[in-house]
Length: 298
Image (cartoon, rainbow, N blue to C red; front, side, top):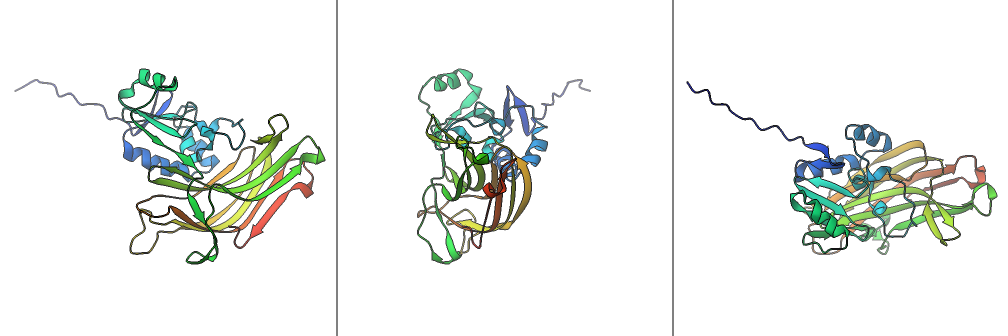
């Protein structure tokens, strides 16, 4: 009888943290996790994040102007899994996002190659990412007819400029906007409820960190033309009711849908949102509070 020993390889966890980067076992686990965290609110994200000891990009305060190139323009889904150096790992490949809209892939966990790229080197394996570059069509009444002209870029229809406690040096702006993330054939559609402050020296708007109350009660319906679920002329529609009241000093980002594009024509999101959104800074005068309602809002 043989006394040979059978060596059993240890099971690789689906998700683990190695060298301060969240590491996914394979692409399937990455995609599943990206979709999962994208639908999480801040409280749900904090509970999930406790399982993994790393500093995420989502926790990093944004200090740049709102229209500047920044990895903080990425949606919360990606900010939740990127570390504060804008990196994560799939298998043995490091994925690094740059503020200029490039996504680098570095095989074999090659830290020297990553350093070379960060020093300005050119990468052989890369892709691009963009925020608010996909066209969105906003129906007047029906998603199938009476369409408005297509709108490009971030759709920030609803804005209110005011002075906190009537102080001329404390200029603020409430903003409700739709935006999209796009990389390769993958796209996400988001609603962002935010507050900005005016910098007199920069002469531009910045993300604000003031505490405020936010309440929203919305019904939405959206779909991507020629998405992966579009077949026989019938689109897969994301829809639902969104309702919440929260006190926060950060933007509220709400994922509305995500899909892969398989068409050859326009990359269009069809969007209808109705309801009410409220924002009010703490200790401010009530007449500066902002409550916007519409059927539809977009």
